[in-house]
Image 1 (cartoon, helix red, strand yellow):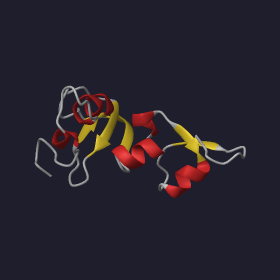
Image 2 (image 1 turned 90 degrees about the horizontal axis):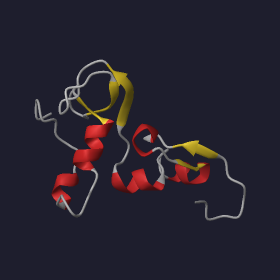
Image 3 (image 1 turned 180 degrees about the vertical axis):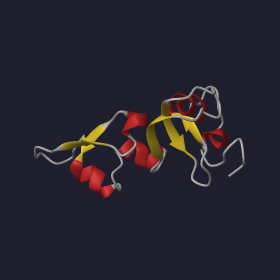
Length: 106
């Protein structure tokens, strides 16, 4: 929520396919186009719609996918949420890092 008392223009976060958040444009500008949640939790991800290749975890094609930084593989948004979004009841902090592809270690 915007801290100023102005009427803000709300825009989709660059990671919108993951977080589904609209944010005040002022805050997006301060965080390189990311909502506050993504700026803190994920950073800017390369998310593409309907990737034809299969997700490396669930093996389902034609889903929205997050590409790994160092290779051409991807993980679908659903699997990313299950595996990498921190849930303190099931994961440790080190499991919350999305850095290495499970196929090529890229």
